[in-house]
Image (tube, rainbow, N blue to C red; front, side, top):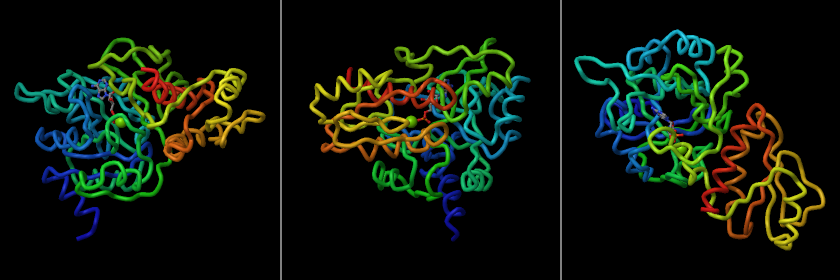
Length: 322
Ligand code: AMP
Ligand code: MG
């Protein structure tokens, strides 16, 4: 049987399939079936108060599971398929929410998205069911941007891993909550805040890197996206250099552009704009070995995808500071 057909058969029968999206690799299970969804939480070791994003092949199908107001329709028409998740009220039928509580962590809203990755879209079209899919990594660790990352992290806890090459965006989707009168940015991601605000014609409320609000945006929990070795973040190169001197150069550097005159084992430049997001997680993984000792990262400015990269670096660092 063709691999994609096998993958969709697996999903239909409640098994787990890891698949590429343009943001990161997802760990998919049918969202309308709590027994299947439970296997995602098990495989990832993910706490059940952390809701999952539900994926569709197109807007029309998403409209059968969540309630779209004119604002939501506008954003979906403009940015789907793409790295944007909309948090919307769940749709109810016959006194039941169509998307079960286990997916939404009991919330009356559901996060929905149409990914822009040909293999993902083909798979979703074949399955014809809503697919819950968080990132395909053990909970709290760096998100996977290649199928090898998935295999290393989850191995045989997944029934099938589809390989679609490296992810084109490289950070998770931007999450916008449209269930309240004022739209809120819950998680900065692969679609820049400025572009969204222009389309909406209003600014997005954004709490920034705040203490986690458990049931609301657990993607914002501090222990996310974290390498095993310590990460420290810096707003400007002067204080980073001072720290490197104190460490006697026993550290590796992460920045958008190469840093000069900083003592270190090695330095990695992610590049700017989209390139920075694409390389962030793969670079963090490469640096995540005991020889690196410790990572010193220079934060990019909070413009465009810089906002998402800052957010992930803060969280990678926060889990160590406790
Ligand atoms: P992951 O796919 O692992 O990046 O995780 C999905 C993230 O989406 C969660 O951690 C939440 O932050 C967010 N999310 C999903 N559904 C909702 C919802 N109904 N309300 C608020 N945030 C949500
Ligand atoms: Mg995740």
